[in-house]
Image 1 (tube, rainbow, N blue to C red):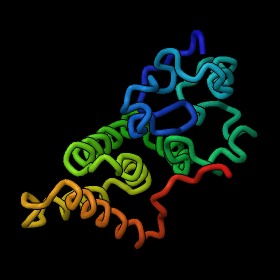
Image 2 (spheres, rainbow, N blue to C red):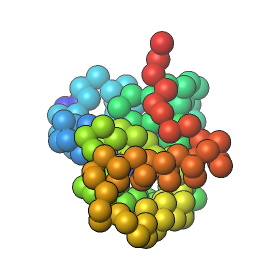
Image 3 (cartoon, rainbow, N blue to C red):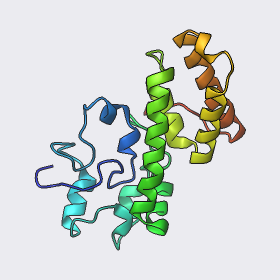
Image 4 (cartoon, helix red, strand yellow):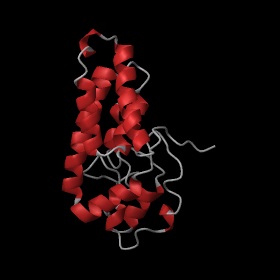
Length: 182
């Protein structure tokens, strides 16, 4: 949207974790307010009408009617944590939230550069979005400590890492799939 710019390109105005999105990572999207972006974003337009708030949770009208069904379906990235993530920003501040997200981005980078067989990018992005930082650290530790990891093919490494993440998600009853609108 013309004139809509934000400092933080990793967490969007509405709570999407752009820094953990395949579109952002592929440089197909500049992130929320990072350039051309989504020209028709109604939430960006709303922000501009409400004094240019950095995050919706800073608006006096949040949560408004725009958030009634905001988490029902996913796009390129999961939408399921948007409200919870905005609540973290509200409670702990954007800087503390961003610090956590930067560590998640590092973990995602490790997964994508060392364990992606070309078919797991979206899976890893969803997992890093939906699992908490401690669970991700545990998954990475378990994956990297496998004694025969260096002898495995990339496909085997990828399957093992995905299995570790899936097992952790299963214990928490978290589905590591995008929910597309039907």
